Each structure stands twice: as C-alpha cells, then as structure tokens.
Amino acid sequence: MAEALIFHYREQQSFLNRCNPLTKLLCILALLIPLAKASFTASAVLLTLLTLLAIHQRLPFHRYGRELRFFVVMTALIGITEYLATRMVVQSITACLRFLSIILSGMLLADSTAPDDLARSLGSVLDRVPFIDGWAVASTIELTLSMIPLIFDVTDQVTTARKARMEKNRRPIRNIKALVASIFGLLLDRSEELSWALQARSFDPSRARRTLAYTKADIFLALAVTLIIFSLFFLLPYFI
Amino acid sequence: MLRLENLSFGFEKTKPILSDISFTIEKGSFTLITGPNGSGKSLLLKCIKGLLKPTSGTITLDGSDVTRHGKRRLASIGLVFQDADTQIVGQTVERDILFGLENLELPIAVQQGRLDAVVHLLDLTKQLKQRPRTLSGGEKRRLSIAGVLVMQPKLLIMDEPFANLDYPSVLQVLKTLLQLKSEGHTIILVSHEVEKILAYTDSVIILSEGKVAAQGSPSSVRPLFQDHGVYVPLEVPLEELTWLKP
Image (tube, rainbow over all chains, first blue to last red; front, side):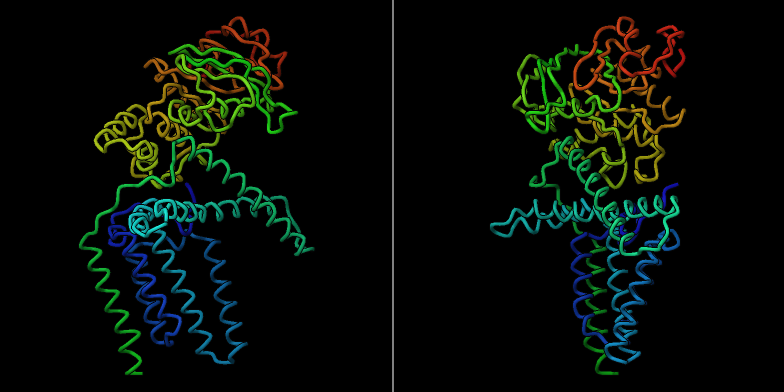
C-alpha cells in the first residue's frame, strides 16, 4: 500500500475535481491576494471555510504523515518570529492562519487538479499572449508541479535510509550538508530518467493540447468565491 | 528489420563505452541481450531508441538508414525502461496510457480504440482509474509496457523487465511477453536473468565491456554465458530455462 503524498492529485468525482483548473487557480489567487492585509477574523473565517472544503474533498490528512509535520513546524516558526517582531499575540496568530490558508489552498488545488489538466487550461490562455509560447510555459509549470511529489518522495527515501543506518546527530551542519547533497543527487538522477521517459514517448512541450470545458461547477465556485471575498474583505471591516 | 553496423558510443570521443556493435534483428523475433553489469546494455538500448546519439556506425530500420533521424526512431521504437516508476507520468493508469497517444496527436476515437485494446491485452481494465503509485510491482511493469505498446511501435525493447519483481509478478510479465511474441511483435529484451526466459528466445546477444562477445541461437550461445559473467544452470535442458513452466 503506497503512502499518500502531499500535493499529489487524486482522481475522484468531487465538486472541486469537476471545476476547471483555471477557475480554481484564479479563485485561489483572488482569495489569497487580499489575505495579505486581512484581519484576524477574516483570516480565521477563511481558514474555517477552506477546512470545510478540505473535509468535503476528503483530503487524507492522517496519511500525509511526516510531510504535514514540516508545515506544522513552519507554522510554529512563523508564529514565533512574528511574535518576536511585533510582541502581539493576535498578530502572530493571524500570520499563522494566513500561512495555513495558503498551504491548504495549495493542497486543495493539487489534490483536485492533475498537472496535465492545469497545463491544458493554462496553455490555451497563455498561448493567446503575443510572443509567448503559451503551451511551452504551461508544460514547464506542469513539469514543475510534477516534481513536487518527487521531491517529497526522494527526501523520504534519503532520510529513511540514513535513519536505518543509525545516523547520529552529533554534527548537525555536516549532516544537513550531506543530506541535501544526497537529495539533490537522487533528484537529478530521477529528473534525468523522467526526461528520457518523456522523450521516449514523443513528448513535445510546445504541442497544443485539447482544452477543458467549463461547467456549472465553475460558475458556482466563482460566485461563491466572489461572495466570500466581498463579505470577508469589504463588508466585515465595517462591522469590526 | 533492425540492423546495427559498427555502432560506437561514448560520452567522450576518446573513451568509447560501446565499440563496433553489429547485429541484425529479424521481424517478429524475440532477441535477448545479456551481459554482466556495466557491459553497456542500457546505453545500447538508449542509442537504438534515439535517446543518445551514436558517435559512429549506422542504424537501419526496415531498410532505411535512421542513424541521424533520432525523432523517427523515437516514434518507431518503443522502450520500456528498467525502472517502471520513472516511466509512468500520468496521474491515473488511463491517463498514463493515453499520454503517448496524445503526443502522437491521434484522433480521440483512435486513442480510445487503442486504449481499450491494450488495456484488455495487458489485463489492466480494473486498474484504469487507479493511481499508478498504488499499483503492485507487476501491475506497474504491465502499465509501463502498455504505455509503450499503445503507440504501436515497430520494435519493442524492454530493459530488465524482471528487476525488483516477486515471483507472481515475474510470471505476469513473462505471460505478457509470450502473448506479445505470439501476436508477432518484434521484441528485444535486456536481462541478465536468462534462466527466466531463455527457453522462449529466438536469438541471444552477449555484451561484454561494450562489445558483442557472442551472438547466435540460444543453444549455440549457452556454453559461453558463464565466460562472460552471466549465470545459467548448466544441468537444466534449454526448454526448461524459463520460470513459466509449459
């Protein structure tokens, strides 16, 4: 049984999976840009809404294991540094909520969007921009997204192998240097193999692909996000 | 069908890794290329496929010289890589099989027809919507074969198809190979585990230190295996040198 990988697509018939990748991407950007200036209440409400969506999407948090621990540590670090800088508890909690919202949005997008679907949607739009090979740019984004689970996979392999050989943490800097070198080495090997595999199956990054249609789910998502943005970032500040 | 004449390859011109490799593969034949680790088997496959450019020599496919036509070789020759995981690029089994067909820009009806045929042939119908990561080793190997076979190559090359597989998975792959052979596919298989497949091969090529050390029918080449670092049980008759007992 394979361990679930964070930021990895899962094929299912959910509401988010039915939405066009471009709609999802634009909605996430529309939600996250005003989040930078959002209040504690707005950030908390947004994170609650995203969490409800994650439950509906059945994100397998319990199977993400150690990758999730990394984000917990990052959240704690953000909270502590924000507190040290401002000496305000609410401010530091708000920073944590914003960070968690960004991560959760990314997880929802990755879980419900196959990288090649994202490339199809983005490519068709970018290709209309003059002097840009839109399909090549979209393919680059697709390959970059495909590398994310590979990075987690390779990191997991390397750390497990080192743990199995009872690595001591007496020289942390030396250990980290060796760990990073191993991860990069393995990642480069895997990338080379992936590039050969793509070439072997006649992959052409500039090839125009079949675009994806928009559905009622896209209209619903766009309306819901517009309503949320209007309520959280324009109406709410008047009441608080 | 495929003819290699004095093919050489090296990352540096002064240090060839493959030297003067010459052999012919007949249409519909099943050829085994074997040799010890580091003999250049995988590099040779990549040269044949068009992923690496030979430094000298010629590659002829169906009578025409394709040495300088890497792209033509990419489309005409299918290569199943040693590590199935790195070859699988789709997010589901179905998407992975369709990946190559989309690159060939075939009409959707043709893609669907080929998908149905290959999924039926390799018994992947139930796994169609599954994520490739969740498949077993044998299923992954069949998926990597399906992804290549669906592009209908003239020649199918497989690099170490039995590597890292348990006994039932090896049997699955063997059955698939024999089925492909019976359907008239031209197959080149690279493996040093000759005892699993030798009984079914038509010809054998032994590579050693980047050169062809021996080639011929399985019975003629068999006594030379151990001289070139390839294990094969001597006391077992040739027709029993397979894990798939008749």
